[in-house]
Length: 81
Image (cartoon, rainbow, N blue to C red; front, top):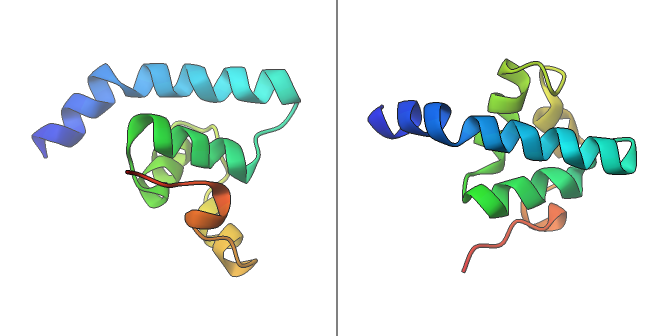
């Protein structure tokens, strides 16, 4: 739980800023943008989506709907080495 609290306090503000910049540059936020955030912050897609939903940046259930359409973490570019 401490790691989550630390992430929310120290990293989440930068992640939200990155989200806003991505959306501003392209006019929308794409699944690939979500994958980019996951790669940058080394967090699972479910976690990133949930955080963005809780902060009002994504509609509730976004990742579930993407999965229903066949999206996977790999298909949106999430790849950790």
